Amino acid sequence: MIPIQHLHPPVIRYDYSSPIVRIADGRKKDDQPFYKHPGKFKSVLLLSIDGLRQADLEDAKLQQYLPNINSLRQTGISYTNAFTSIPSDSFPGVLNYLTGASPKTTGVYYDDTYSRILSDKLGSPAGIEVEFAENIDKNSDLLNGGGNFGINSIDPSKLRVDSNGNRVYPHNYLKVNTIFEVAKASGLHTAFIDKHPAYDIANGPSGKGVDDFYAPEINAKVALENGKLVDQSTAQNPANLTFKTTTKDTKLTEAYDDLKVNAILNQIAGNNSLGTTKPGTPNLFGMNFQALSVAQKDASNNGGIATNGTPSSGLIDALEHTDASIGKIVNTLKQQGKFDSTLIVLTAKHGQNPRLGTATLITGNTFTDALTKAGITVNQATQDDIALLWLKDQRRASIATTVLKQLANPAIDTVYSGGALLAAGFGNPLQEDRTPDIIIKLKPGYVISNSTKRAEHGGFSDDDTHISLILSSHGLETRVKGTSQMMKVSSKQIAVTVLEALGLDPRKLQGAWSEKTLPLPGTQIEDARNFLESFNRDCR
Image 1: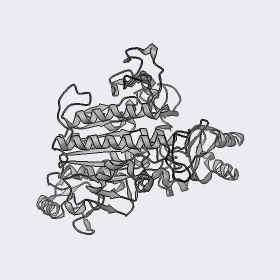
Image 2: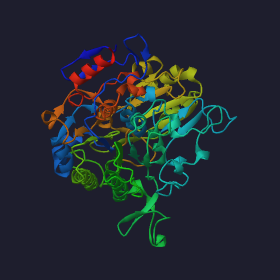
Image 3: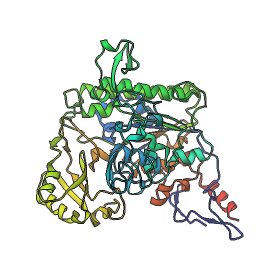
Image 4: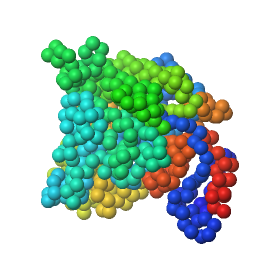
């Protein structure tokens, strides 16, 4: 039997040390349910606001712009000490709560990384950059990515290949399954919305976890025409418009977010994301907001928060627009009579560093030039407010570390390599094809960039990693509504809690099981008595 350690009843600490339950006659039953009880919620809706930090929710100067988010706090549970992945980039951040696991287990350290075993084509030497963003679209200038807003928008010829010549889609790159795959395998309806077709990674290794995948390309060239976001292919009078990248303008990004909000409203009403079919409201669905992140990075006076704590007009506008969108979603759930049966999880893939003021920029070749001068070749450098380095000759990692430390660069906090990588919770680059040979932790406030930007994410700082996390629903027990949980938690724990909310077996989530990820505390979603009774009954 699987041992259970009690905390404060009825919260349960799960032991994932064995997926096998022995039943009465001594046979092994590999797929024995962890517990049998109906889920307390019919649906779970994941809402991610890129850049939303816990400090933003606690900032008195921002409260007036967050009425709908604050309303969710009043009807839910606030986790005031929640942290995302390190690196705190979008891909590892979203995979934290879709898999319950960190980059060492998912194998995904960033959206732009390096694999020592993949190549550009069959017969080419192994070892190549692997980037999953707009670069793999059929046409990244268009909102539909040149396809159907989903996996069909990915150009297979732009993907890397494995040793057998198979094209590696984003979902192939992920090493463990997702909550969508667990839900789909249980017969539930799933949907997911994000910013690139490359978010096909949410489908999981099966490639089939998400029934309704909608991913308008955020780096498309767009304009507003009669208040509607258009690209060259959808504009009525393109000659009269000036098209630019969505993320170059907060207003354009807000209109882009509206596309995804409308898709969520369609889904709540029982339609698919485009409103063309009626499959029913998803049991597990989610989307991502981008406007706040764009406003935080804006290097003009319209971006970020000043050193004295005064929010810029652009940031206020992005907050108000995003909060109003949350209000639309919640009101639609209420109008449809689905707020009691839907658990809303409001969180963020990552924060943004620095929160106050403007980043001190250091040029992109600062560290790579120093290593090149020392005769050390860097095959790939992924840099924001962190630096991930993959070396041509891994045997020189120790020497490279010494070179970097001797720079005495004021931006460097810590250089990780070898055993220090393992001690910090990362993988072993000598055994795993994707783990960087060196990770440079920067001091807060520094960003590596050759362009102009106010802030970035990816690194270790609190501004990067200390994110918002709220669980809200009328269906939560009265005693937990309006409460705060102050213990430190990880966004990985969202994945386990989501499955519990739907009455699904958390052991089936491979990454969470591997890393012994616990559910979020204080939800009262799990029923200890029913769990123990059903468990004992199944083991008789």
